[in-house]
Length: 252
Image (tube, helix red, strand yellow):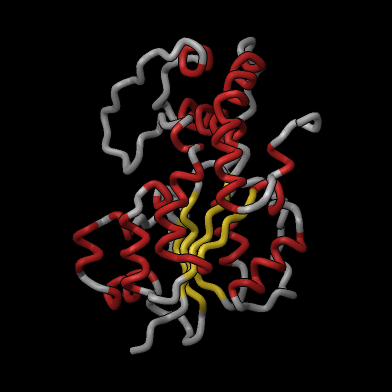
């Protein structure tokens, strides 16, 4: 059996991966593995991977038409370099997509998302200014929910994926993609599917957190995060060979 075409959305968390999943799954030529939540996380499971590609296809794509582009979203994948090799072994011509968000915004969104789900007990100040130790978890999670800073080290996370995928890895910027029809058409074209297709609700927010009141420490936290992430943004820009203007203040 020839290898099906495959695309993996690898992260980053709180960067629009669920929105991107829906934009791909809506396309008539693409079928994404479900459910979207909780994610399959298949390629993190060593025992499942050992069962082979045919078992994977039978489990997640039992009735897919021949020629469909298959895909899976795993927001933890970007943090697990071993996954790159596992995907390549199953699908040698696979594509991978990383979607990245302004790391300051991403860190704050990650914090509020974790707080909303009852895992985070510290205040914004305690996490980002006072650096109070992390709470102890009473459950097993594939990646730490408290890696608000580490998860924004995009350049380091992308290196093993670039080595494994080369030109088959596409790095997208959340702020340049969501709500921008031309950017989505370019992505469809890169994947080799009909770029003229227009999915519904392209600007709708997905997994938006509940409304909350203002935090008196947020401005100070943002300032500190901006300083912290500045060298990481520069490293990513060097790695990608481009400047990401929307992540910089206009005066920079």
